[in-house]
Image (cartoon, rainbow, N blue to C red; front, top):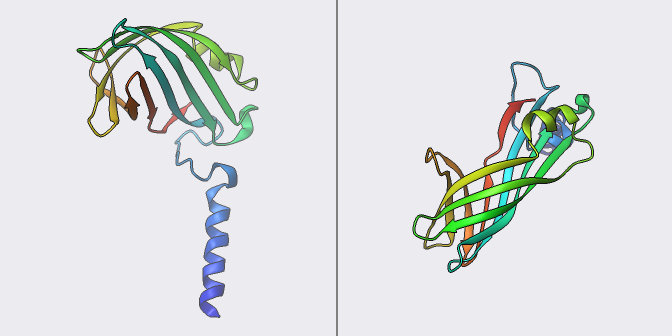
Length: 163
């Protein structure tokens, strides 16, 4: 009986400290929580080994830790089109901002998400169906994902940033 009460009290305490809906976000900011966001990016590509054509989407999600800024989640999607080089696994894509959440602050969109952008990625396709996605210019590992012939998917790690 004492163990059950102790366990119940611990679960209530953990639930109270975790912050409810944002419990899985693990950001800690010296600036306070008001404008700290957990951010990650998801990409989906289709590509043709023969023609070298590539297209897809890339969406960045910003989850504000506290809804003090007037929104709790802001996502921005780019429609991508460009080329794929099979030998190097390089994608050179032009992205056109195609949509964003209605609650996204216009200052955030203006500052962080231009109407168009170029994206150059290098993807290593591993035999087990997984992939590693790096910046084509620096080689910096950006994400891990999966692939099958003609398609690739990735998701970056969540990072904390001050908006």
